[in-house]
Image (cartoon, rainbow, N blue to C red; front, top):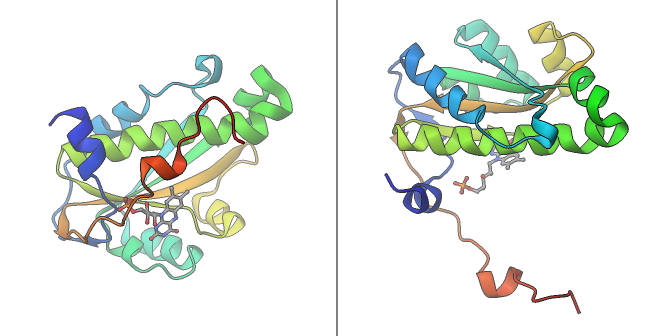
Length: 174
Ligand SMILES: Cc1cc2nc3c(=O)[nH]c(=O)nc-3n(C[C@H](O)[C@H](O)[C@H](O)COP(=O)(O)O)c2cc1C
């Protein structure tokens, strides 16, 4: 699949077939994430793979009852190691680059998954402290996103995008 086609066609998938995703496919998808750019190449990202139904059910509850999370064959939690990023970039690293670096990794991950016909959804709405407790995270590891993975049972229509004319500014804002 060509890059632009993958970018244009990818969409969030919340309805999955129960078929398991082979471990090597999950690892290839995560490997794609690790090729993302990061501030000073610090690569503060960490990935937790969850397949256990009990843990996925707890995570779905921590994500304000977004039950589709428990039905995804694989759930990834993408974290930033705040010690690693702040050692390089202090407060700006901890509060901004950690989010930018992991977001770049996540976008790679979503596109790599789509290319492999694996559906995914980026979930940002969750109770961070509950998720920390479920995954027994040390204080320096901040969970920034939950990503569901599964072969699509159904793919919904692509939500409309703002037209480029609406978002583009030439040279300056006003
Ligand atoms: C930071 C972020 C947080 C999101 N959080 C959620 C979420 O909690 N639950 C959900 O179902 N989708 C979530 N999404 C997915 C968006 O709803 C989705 O990307 C958007 O509607 C566009 O649809 P598309 O991904 O199919 O193009 C999130 C996406 C991003 C980037």
